[in-house]
Image 1 (cartoon, one colour):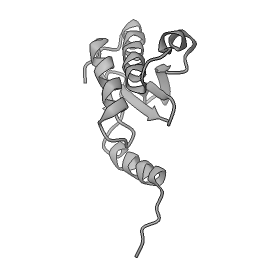
Image 2 (cartoon, rainbow, N blue to C red):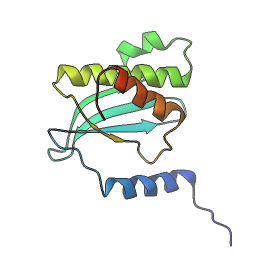
Image 3 (cartoon, rainbow, N blue to C red):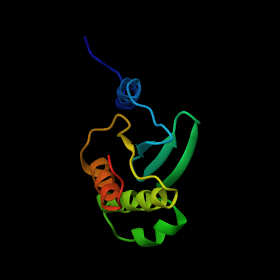
Image 4 (cartoon, one colour):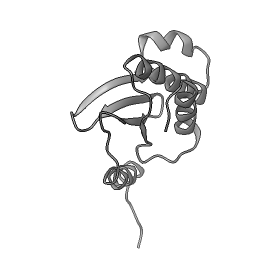
Amino acid sequence: MANNKSRSAARIRRHARIRKHMAGTPERPRLNVFRSLKDIYAQVIDDQAGATLVSASSIDKELRAKMGSLTKSEQARLVGKAVAERAKEKGIESVVFDRGGYRYVGRVKALADGAREGGLKF
């Protein structure tokens, strides 16, 4: 029998399964990643308060000028560094990495590496 489930529905199921065991706290918030075909987004979230503390994306006005002719993986690394810098300004040192149901390769890995370079611990 054919399995006609969409890839996005499968990703959402994987993300829900991961999120059952992961939550961001005020001491150690969650670094969430969303990846679209063209752009990448990162948020640092305190799940107990239900608030986004810091965010960065490849469509930010500050970062858009730097993107130029970079590849999507290089853009993801810049977004990771930016979210790490913004988190450091808010006093956030360590986070829980939530890959959002995506495989830890390519742009997701580049964003995580950029965040580590920026000084976040996870």
